[in-house]
Image (cartoon, rainbow, N blue to C red; front, top):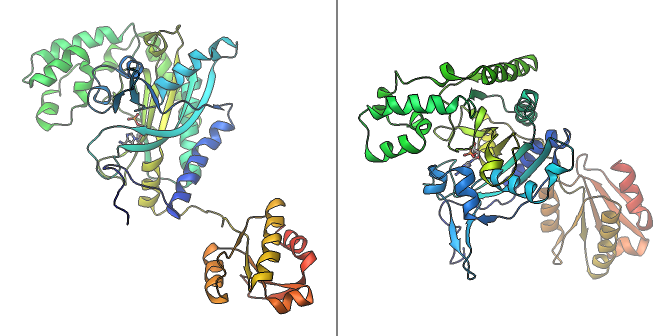
Length: 420
Ligand code: AMP
């Protein structure tokens, strides 16, 4: 233990559990890579205004949870609390939308930061894999993204997740609903902060977790009754495409999500084994975001899946990922001369694409064989002075226990043959 510990609300990923995180990132991104999404990477921090405008001035993320800082040069920056605003900013900056190939389909993977009250499944530093499809309004695109997330979770072996689906309307019908909702909410018995929220973002009041608030909301006007015909038709088409694809979902008219930019389709993936932090991923359509950050009209849709909570969901379901052993061959030298010779063989194996490791530090046979076992290697190579004098190494099959002497010059070729 050192004098220091990981900051509150954060944790380190260390082997062997870290391998699961890599496998989850890989599994979530694989269906995207196979579906025309290109990789994008943006800085870990941005101009604070991007999030204030993009995510929304009234959201918890912006008002309470952002890590902000002023640089020595006087710039106001924020560690990124989410990915969409940054990705859209970067796509606009690189003019990707002008290449005549819409939608611009992008995927990303990285660290995000929110100053939240830490608890199981809720951290101040967490990891997401996300996807954004920019510049096209097409219900098939919304359906594609939901289907790909479902495919990723299923490929990982998750079963106990549900997809919640809603439509938040567009710039035609949402304002009408917003006003009706505000009129209703202003008559309720609510605290000052919630009253302020009614004026800035009344939909978020529906999301209030407190029982006394929820009790008063029973007769609140429903967005469903206010959707314009275009939004209704769009939503029906998304639903029909999901159904045709065999992807089950639940209509959840209370789903508003904690970010202001969503329009029309919104969805969340929830897992029933996670307790209160049950959302493993979420997303939706954000047709107005580009204009909000100074870009042209670019209707878009995207999602972000939380890697930390996906790993917790796997653990909750008892799913063991089939992670292949990282080392195929482990070399154990006995003595100085053998160390030089076997290190050469290991280098040769690695250059031939065979994963190999080596007992460093001149350890005895017993300790080195323990490490060989722990490495999960299929084969070990052992050589001592007598073997070298005879020009051989001992090749041991760790599964069968069978050991054979192989000419030193043929060891690498023999292993390549055996490992296929
Ligand atoms: P959001 O942008 O809030 O919808 O987040 C998308 C996903 O990121 C969530 O469903 C979680 O899986 C993950 N996530 C968000 N905030 C946190 C957090 N504080 N700790 C861990 N995971 C988080």
